[in-house]
Length: 151
Image (cartoon, rainbow, N blue to C red; front, side):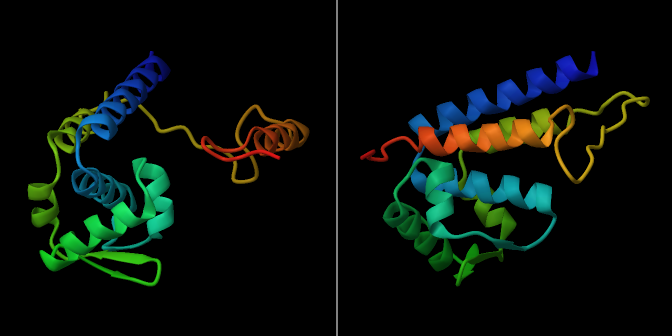
């Protein structure tokens, strides 16, 4: 039952992100992503490059750079050498779209008292042998990334 709830929540979050990536500006998506990352990391300084954010937001590095500069000018963040420091969380919340609130409300639904968060061993994901992980890595290296030209 708990795994079904986790799966449903995860799928709803993915669907919300897909809609967000289609209909909202790069600045709104950047705000959503920074807020969600801060919620999970519980830190004000987050090690993120603009190239990585571009991949996560479905935007070019140039567009992410422009959106981040707007947020920096507004006093919401400070970016410096692969790190983004959140200075004004309320400002980010004002610049984000409604998708952040929808995802945040879904995440903060109180769980039952007997729910326990499962833990995985640090060495590898549960149910995966080292050989399966190697095969998966080899397959993903052959597939490549969308938009990548292949020889």
